[in-house]
Image 1 (cartoon, one colour):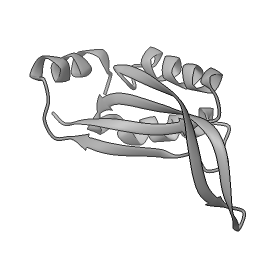
Image 2 (tube, rainbow, N blue to C red):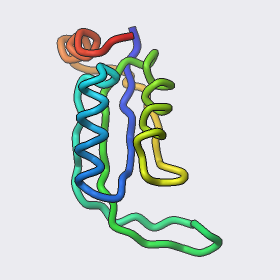
Image 3 (cartoon, rainbow, N blue to C red):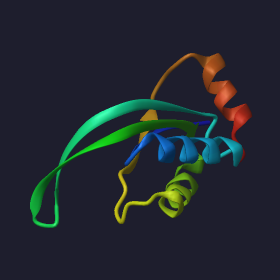
Image 4 (spheres, helix red, strand yellow):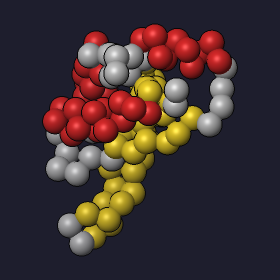
Length: 105
């Protein structure tokens, strides 16, 4: 079984909480960490933008990543949200087994 972390940025804490709770409730993620306020700098509309955002990390099974991305895009207010998955190469086996037990493939 393979596991991934999904990194997401959202415009505010309310959106972070909503997406986190939805993903955990729907068993698409075992848990979510809301990291708090971050400063983002990026190209958008042909110019450099700066904004405050909230970072969010989900832990899930790799086999669920495509479903997670699709669902987050439906819930997210941005036109082109940051939703990227990174593989978990190693970790506490008991924690990884817990992720498996809390998610639904």
